[in-house]
Image (cartoon, rainbow, N blue to C red; front, side, top):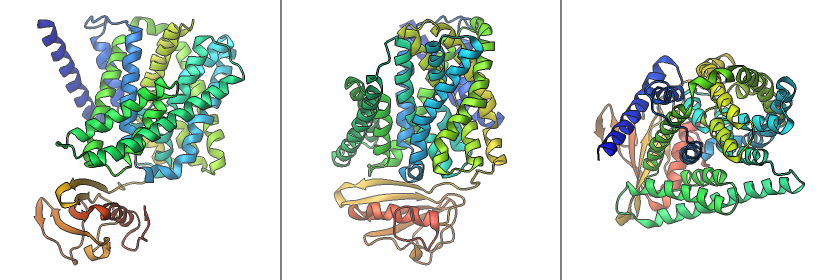
Length: 489
């Protein structure tokens, strides 16, 4: 029993330190992911003496954590916000990946005299942007919806083709004319499985009438994890199935959708903390010295040549300005994903994989320090920010016996709901604002009540009017009192 008590105490302490690291990182401007890595290194063999070198276990836990991070990203991404960026997001997660692998591979072959397949393997491992890094850093920068949507879609979708490339290059299997068909099948089937399970899960959750509100988030996350399992068992991309499933679920009419998203955010943070602490524990600082020079060479090629060229290739057809392309180039954040990919190469038996793991670890630290700390400044210098603007928060809970829904609305700072009279909302038939909470005081409003920033509204709507009510509130939030009757204003 003593070992269990110590283990639980260590885990609880690490989680608490990870939570506190978020607050510290905000104050000092240092990405919290690096603090998690530091906690792992502190616990490891070089400091406190915990020895951990199990690569297969680290890879398995890393993939499990990545699944939960993708679930959080999909469930908390609003489709209306990222839909205009779908084309550029798909291009960044496919075309840009191919360009990045090619450029880094050729450069490492020429500069470090690597064998071609090994060079391209390194390029594949380094080509994937990191969902955890993007979701934790980017959403605090305040860039335009087009840019944030493109980067979120890229980080959520590019893991799938990159994992396929790493497995293919690391395994040593011959590349034939059937290889592209295999890639197309795995990506297409993964997306289809995710979409079907997302739609089916949303349909089931709306009709389940579960006895506790806390069961809805658990069920939603379980559906997304099932999508990963189903994709892998079908020899398709489980990661893409996970993200698509979560994206569909997060944008469906789920009961207690706000609670589902909040729980997913907490689960995502827990996965990030655990993953980065584990990777820090796995790292051996004594070996990292020899990896510094190749890491700096690979990082310079990636940051100054491969990423800009890949963004140009992906973004040019969509007529993005040079400022937007420059920001996309600088915000290709790396995190735990390249380290997990390097571990996959190690498990597959690639001859250069042990050195690759150390190089990637050093490179992630360097690039996160360089890009993560300067990203807000880059956004301001390139003038791609939208200061003081946040989307309105809309949550709904079912009132099953009444055949109605209770909708909670929070008016954010900068919202165009500010100054709008309730009669000007023109909510659909079957919906009414029943309560307003302002400055911690609640009152019953009338048509002449004028909304203010930070107001909270309780709207009661019939089940049939709920979706139209939410769409109308979001439309006025985006376009003001004269917003037309269409989704998103």
